[in-house]
Length: 435
Image 1 (cartoon, rainbow, N blue to C red):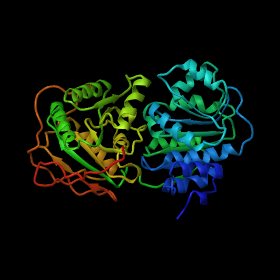
Image 2: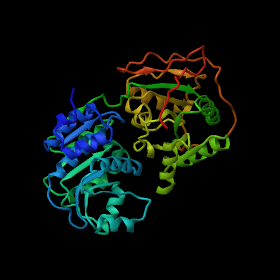
Image 3: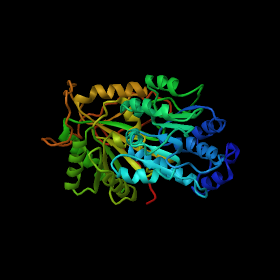
Image 4: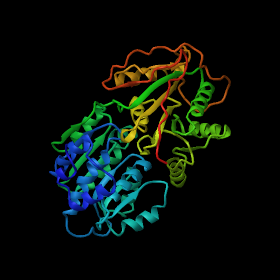
């Protein structure tokens, strides 16, 4: 069995790894770290929750420890780009754990907070800068940061950056970096554009893949519950939440207004719920995540802006109140549960307007997601503009015939099977989680 000691990491890093409670490298870490330590460009593909941050973070810190001298004012030695504020904060928290006991500085720049304070922090120089592309370009325009001494570039969740249109920002940022440089690209899915991205920014990369792109973690139990309309979804969601009063549930809505409206509906029904989306300030998003992580709020309603940045081991359930319009985002959403070897449930509420989206998800994942209950609605053409949210009439349709949904075809796929008769919810095991 491979150990962190076997990988040849710096003793200071090994001490930080032990202090963080890491025991043995995950598959993506065991495969990617040796190549990264050799200075090779790496393209890593792995499911969410498998330790990708350490797979690039540990060799990055190791190589920076071999460099002499402090960074010059405004200069950056290594740059990590991520698509969302939440993911930037998650990455930087992990990197700060790895650099404990050293003089290395990890700084972050994201939108939604004071840019003047970021200018002040960057003026003192940075060993590792973790940034969202938009705010980084703002700082470059102010000449508040220099990238010409950065000889390491990491693109985390690169497919999400493509989806969010950050490719144009990357074309602006990359030429400013120093050369020669080592580039590492990590993602959970592999759309066609990713190959083009790797050819443009990586040199003879080693491809490290520990699971088929689009495959969910083995311990996620997936299921679909048919819904007549939005109001049916609200009633279904509250019913499921009532059955799991001690769990942490992450609920995904498609729009910012829909997420906020659903959160208020849950609060009105006496559920401790918070929300994060693009209309929230960074402070509001941080407070919501803190409340969810600490368990003072048991339900977090989010848009896809949070799908890549929530690393909370205690999330027991993911509910897709709305299916995502990009099928790859489904994989990232449900990957927020069953983390660090735990079990998790992912349940999607699907109306007739979303049957086409469901088919795209099943095609990507090469499985038939089992149906847990409800009467399958007639497929209808989705509206051109979906405003999200709830309201209207109707209640839960739990007595309908539960369709079999077919047998899963993906390797290791765990199916949620209805228990105790047709149209009923699956029996879900109670799991003890640390507070």
